[in-house]
Every structure is written in C-alpha cells, then in structure tokens.
Length: 389
Ligand code: NZQ
Ligand code: ZN
Image (cartoon, rainbow, N blue to C red; front, side):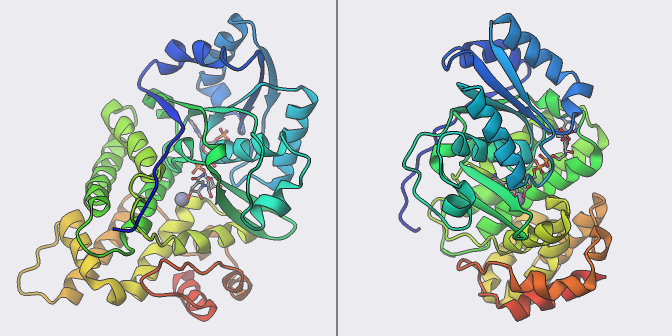
C-alpha cells in the first residue's frame, strides 16, 4: 500500500427528512445572506425548491438566487456566480443539485473570495489555495459524481476547449445533506448515467497499483457489486428507498477519498471523457460507458490478475478450465453486456461526436500516470476510433 494522509472535512447528514431536520441549524452558523445555487429547474418541479426556500425564509435568511447551472458547468457560469456572491457579500453558498451544480459552486466559492483569475491560477494548472473560499453547503439530488464529499470541481473553459478537474480540500463542502427520496424524480437516462459514473470511479481506482492484497480493492469489489445490484433494483422501481440510498452512499464512498487511499489510481477514461465533453458537451456517464470496455480491452493484459479478480469477484464468472486471459476477457464482456442492459449508449456516434473531431480530441487528452498501460495520443485515437460506431 502507498503512504497516505487522510482527512475529509465534509459533515454528512444522510436520510429521509434530513433537510427539514438539519438545514436551518446548519445555515445559522454562517450568517444570513445565502447564495442559493441550482440547475435548470428540476428542483422547482419535484418540490425541493419549495421545501428549501420555505426553511431558509422562515429562519430569516436573505436568499440570492443563482440558477441555470448547466450540465458540464462553464467558466463563464462560474464568473457569473462569483459576481453575484461578491455584490451581495454572501456568507454561504448553498448548492442544490448534482455534480454540475456542486462543482460550479466550489469554483464560485473560490472566485468570490479572491481577485485572481481562478481559471489561470487554479484550473489551467494546479495552484496553492492561500485564502479561504466562501463556505459551501450542498443538498444532493442525484447519485453519481460523489462531489459532495471532496474538493473536486470539473469546469469547462469553452473558449479554450478544455474540461478539467482539480481537487482542492478547501473546496470540500462544509456540510452535505443527502436525502434519497430527493432522487426519486431523476429520469432513467440520468440515473443510469450517474450509476455508471459511480462504477467508473470505483473501476478507475481498482484497476491500478498496488496489485498486492489491499483494503481498497476489497471495499471496491463490494461497492461495485452493490452499484450493479441497486441500479437494477432502481430501474425496476424508481421509488425503491433502499436502492436509492445504496446508490447515493456508494457514489459518496467512491469519491470521498477513502478507496483512493494507498492507490495509484488511473482515471484515464475520465481524462478522455472530459475532452469529449469539452468538444461536444456530451453527458459524462454516457461518455464513460462508451469508453470503458474498449479502454479495458487495450490495457487488461498489463493488469491481468486484477482483471481476473474483477471477473470472478464482481461478475461471478466461473474460472474452471479457462486461462486467465479468457476469464479477464469474460469480465470485460460482462461489463459491456451490463452497459447495454441498463440502456446506456455503446458508440461515440450516438453521443453526437463527429469522426473528424477525434484526432484533435485525442491530442488534447491528459495522459494518466496511474494506468496499467501508459497511453499515447495515438493509442487514445485508436480507442476513440474503435468506440466510434
Ligand atoms: O439542471 P436540472 O434541471 O436540476 O436537471 C439535472 C440535470 O439535467 C438533472 N437532475 C438532477 N437531480 C434531479 C434531476 N432531475 C430530476 N430530479 C432530480 N432530483 O440531472 C441532470 C444532470 O445533472 P448533473 O449535475 O449535470 O449530473 P452529474 O451529477 O452526473 O454531474 C456531472 C458533472 O460532474 C462532473 C462531470 O464531469 C460533469 O461536469 N464530475 C464531477 C466530479 C467531482 N466533482 O468529483 C467527478 C466526476 O468524475 C465528474 O467528472
Ligand atoms: Zn466521473
């Protein structure tokens, strides 16, 4: 196991009714001016907006609204939020939504507390956060990114055609309220996309060194089985409280740094998906679903024992009479079949990617140092081409 230091500053309140029970006491700690940030309006249809604003107003807060945060939030949107936060001298940012809202709010929390250009200083390249961002709290409405319990924020610079993430511990939300019933209204296509994102975060961690016995890999196998089982259950019954709870907690567990401890981590598929997103604005989980099986067929021979464990322990592939290569390949086929079963796309063409874009996208992808097989831009292009149709 590699050396590590562990800290997670986010306090989590999980379960049905947690917003009603805890929100007013949490916001009370910061002052009464609250920037209420949300996306395209789903919270107005499912009643969450009404529930939250009623609590905030009843407890005497001034609410400044920052709405319309899009999927794959842009740097322009971050600057809009920062302007609002500065003009109104807000004491707390309260983000309600999924990864896009939470990530945008983290970047706003920084941009509102400094005069620096945060893209140039903190996203174009890693920087040192030598100031205190505006405090952030989040209310999670969809399972997927796990952004509620880390400092990670993925932002798209549309002008530069770069979508990139940085993880600054000072951006960890101070609190996260996670009510599984809030996710009942997530449409099926977004639920499976978020579900696959969870699986992807776990796989990107699991398929990396060290390869010897380690706690992280054991937890990861259990988490992957749980995501597969509960995604199937939630597809059958979107109001299955147990399934929605497990998906939410698995998404937090995948990205709250715990399973990454002692691991090198890969995340090459994420690097590739982020650039696909920068060029096409495609959906994150859908892009990952297209890429993973093909990427794994490219790297599995370099990490064969782990791919054998994946096949046997996650997909229950029997090993008798088969070579390790055959077992590993069957594991990747089981993953591919699951992607089809839950209705995710299988080709880049379905995501609206144009063939002639592929080379430029491949050339702009970051290369992960944690992959079992270090990619080159040429091999990334090969993978994109194999994924195309
Ligand atoms: O915008 P609204 O109207 O709210 O609708 C959203 C959006 O259309 C909808 N939705 C969310 N909760 C809902 C709901 N619809 C009905 N009922 C509800 N309860 O879902 C749609 C997608 O939301 P979004 O936040 O974009 O999805 P997700 O959580 O998958 O976030 C994706 C973003 O997070 C980044 C991705 O790259 C992408 O930009 N990531 C962030 C990470 C992190 N910070 O740790 C890690 C990830 O790997 C990822 O890169
Ligand atoms: Zn992801």
